[in-house]
Length: 227
Ligand code: TIU
Image 1 (cartoon, protein in one colour):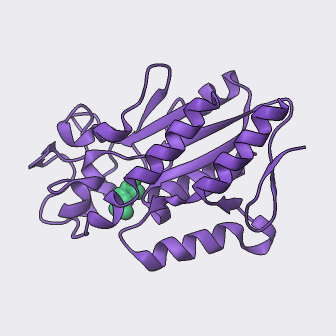
Image 2 (cartoon, rainbow, N blue to C red; image 1 turned 180 degrees about the horizontal axis):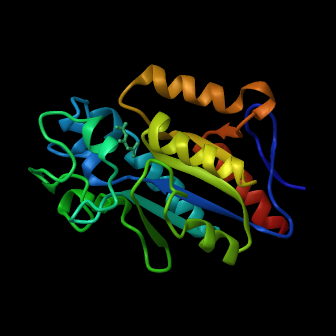
């Protein structure tokens, strides 16, 4: 048995199934000036600070042949997949579909929708466009995970209490063993990140585990050595 040293207790790595990494929404819309995040009034600098750590996590997972999924939040150009409620709430001076500095905000195929170049998907990695905050809602993600016999998920990306937390809760309800990578996720609000980490692992890991990138990579190293 191999494990990742995690909170609230050790996270056992699978024996007859796979672990995958999901990197949530590391797209220009949330990380660059002029994108959706900044339009909503947020300081994107908090998010760009984790890019080197997410890169290290990605590179470590690539080295251990862990399947990798990237998501991008975005809508069809005609916004037919964007609920009216989403257009009304969570808006700044501009809203979803409006033209901004990075093209049309949160629209698939626009410059702002691209994963930032440092973290761009490599060949063989799966890019999942998603219309909602969660990565399972109206996407092919679950089909890909089932096809690859994935039962365990490492979750990273932005923002911790919005798309990352929603995805982890969706995954937990579907039976996946979820670990949120503490230093490879970030929020525009420091206190929301901290609260999310705590609420995921509270009550005996009610939603899942948390661990640092170093702890994850150390655990994967011992797992691959055994496997
Ligand atoms: N606004 C905010 O914190 N997040 C989002 O709108 N989407 C994601 O978290 N990706």
